[in-house]
Image (tube, rainbow, N blue to C red; front, top):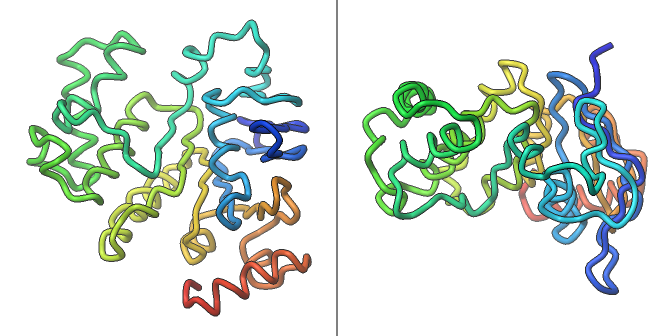
Length: 249
């Protein structure tokens, strides 16, 4: 059996009086892709931010390769060098070119020389269909191109796991496919991923497991065909029914 890359044990998180995560248990093994689904406000984005140590958890543990990374003694910057996080809003540096956005992390966090970083950065951008756009700044790129730059940037450090937070939600419908294709390629290479998504067809195609979050809890998890096709919990059935009525499945 593949070794766990990420483990969450009883993770809780509140913002003031609002309890967002209520005892999350989740294991992500080597080469596995897990899709987090659920309504807005169910805790998907907060969960990813807790894994990346951008939010401090209130209770429980997060482990990366068996190490408790939520221990106060752990350097969060060192942890983030081992993880890649892609935000729904791209979060590219607007004053840097596409290539500069991709190579900055490798040079600063991993000590890679500029020449080596730029060589691998150009190859990554070409791989994601962005050859010839290396010198463009974000405002000269479409939303789909910006998101692919963000994915290339997150992947440039060869992370142990890639965390994707609703990476298509800010895109026009015609741009969604090109971003999903980039993620699909990474999955084909066996990259370990946790994907918060509202694209059910993509979750069905790419994920090894789907976890449905409802009010800060994982109430149902399993293979995509089971959770999306034959859900057991009434909360899951209601959620999928609403998506079906809205024409989103």
